[in-house]
Length: 270
Image 1 (cartoon, rainbow, N blue to C red):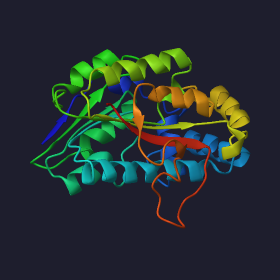
Image 2 (cartoon, rainbow, N blue to C red):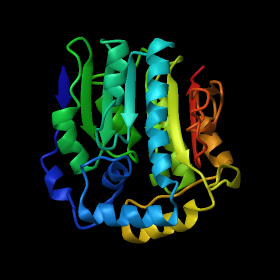
Image 3 (cartoon, rainbow, N blue to C red):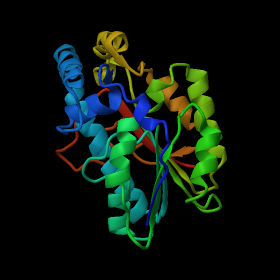
Image 4 (cartoon, helix red, strand yellow):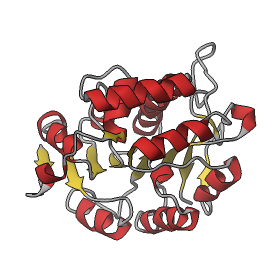
């Protein structure tokens, strides 16, 4: 079944005159749901930091491997995908429900164009459930409260936070968001996370000027973090092999791994 919550004021928030992350990201991975301003800013950022398209693709591929691993090998049947972005091929619910038709997936985003597409594209199996809620990552309590209409928080949940905490500029606030969401899920739940880094060993130095340009010309503002700061999001959780690595390397097929300045990891709540 499909359950999509639509705010009455959603269309009023749509601003096609300023580049927006969800649409630029869609442009970088070859999607069609973007505007000229998104393409212009996307091309400029790619000119400054050419690996950005590789990061976008590696992040998307990481999503596929992580969901397949959790649904297929760890028996996870519930996913809370915070910071969904624009639907493309092989979204979280499609991967999970292909492996387990009874999987229940809740998507969370607050971008009105994502909402419009979610209404038509994010439909799941009859055995499972697919829901979309319009909420902000800065309000984790509201996310949990509304997700509970679809998910059973007495059973394990995979919390997906791919490329979302980089839009929470204050690191203490970002850590608090993770703590509050993970406190709401039971033992045996998972945190799936990717985050851009400026660490030199992953080639991240070029992120800094590109992000400065982004913050002057697009929305919402973004930040990269050190590996140490990103690792702190997993406090109290147990990282699964291979630990926190470039997301292009996480459980990648031999010969297909790419090193991009975006960490990825999956951890379980003891």
